[in-house]
Image 1 (cartoon, rainbow, N blue to C red):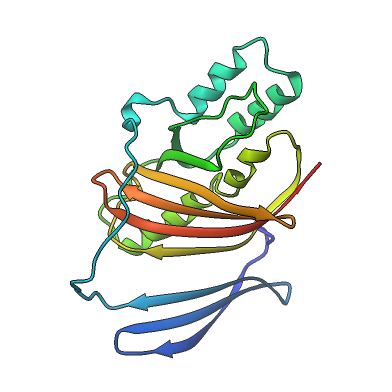
Image 2: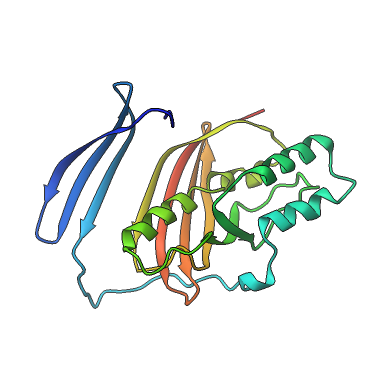
Length: 223
């Protein structure tokens, strides 16, 4: 997309039922679709059929360093290669509106394969408050894309990324949450191949409630 050009949104009423409704959205710029979305809505309904996975046991965010603090710590190490130092400085200069605290940050001095799993404490910067839940869902959608596809690269750290971009992104919202409160983002990649990677994620509230489930497939080209 082009941030300098207005976006035209076409919305189709795909289905309107008593409990569930579906809307299909197409975003258009320069007469061409740049984004498509299918959103499903449900009236709130109770059910005796309920279960969820168990939230991973990890240190609380108050005991962990932010991503900025970790980068600053790495940059103070004289053994960091110049190329990687420039890469870290570029990341540090980005204005990301998310607070991020990695639970298990990778060892930047090693190219050894890692298990394709990551854990982050995440939250939106600033105060959103008790506003419309749809606002928190939109913010969570933004948060969920951060470093998500990179999980598929952890077992392949000996390669340099030439090109990496998302092909599709799906989300399921299970319970109310505050995007400006700390949530644990659990990411894992069950498969990669054919220049594609598949990642799955879960956003947990601090009280152990599974709030959001995510899935994404993307193109990954390395050399």
